[in-house]
Image 1 (cartoon, helix red, strand yellow):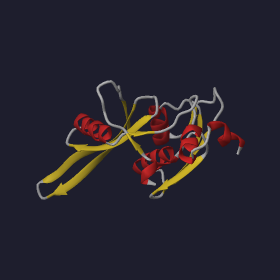
Image 2 (tube, rainbow, N blue to C red; image 1 turned 135 degrees about the horizontal axis):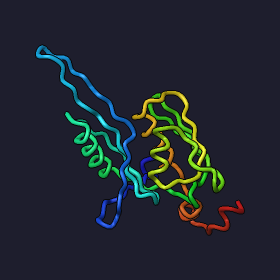
Image 3 (cartoon, rainbow, N blue to C red; image 1 turned 90 degrees about the vertical axis):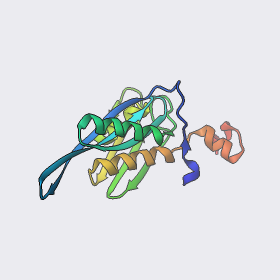
Image 4 (tube, rainbow, N blue to C red; image 1 turned 90 degrees about the horizontal axis):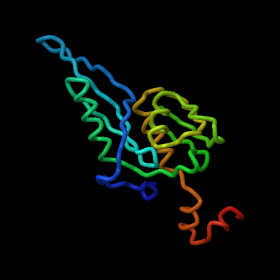
Amino acid sequence: MAGLINRVKITNDIELNDRLVAINRVTKVTKGGRTFTFSAIVVVGNGDGIIGWGLGKAGEVTAAIAKGVESAKKNLVRVPVLKGTVPHEQSAKFGGAEVFIKPASHGTGVVAGGAMRAVLESVGVTDVLAKSKGSSNPHNLVKATIFALTQMRDARTIAQHRGISIEKVFRG
């Protein structure tokens, strides 16, 4: 499956927007008292098929978000977005979280829950039906959603892979 993932190099002309998915306060109890730190899950995307996620941990919320954004910029992937929706149905599982993504007609909007909504909107999908099953852990939901998106292939990719024309892909 690693061959299907299209890694993207960051160039200065790509403008990425970041979205905070979840933030957690972590408490470490020691002999001297309690120490509070924060972990932030951040998704970055350009709204045109490029998406990445990152996890940042720091003593302050803003520093954790900044670290998450930097981490997200290091693992960007390209996914197919056709006319504001996904090319086909896809399901994926990561840990205890399972996601199902289905294309929708124009005007439907993004019908998805919290963590999945952030990922789908950051990648540039405007019309989609999505359902999360199993765990609602935002870490696993983000990873499962991005994994489902990276497994998707459009007609041009399939035709190129098979060595045939796009018309033959649709005719069978």
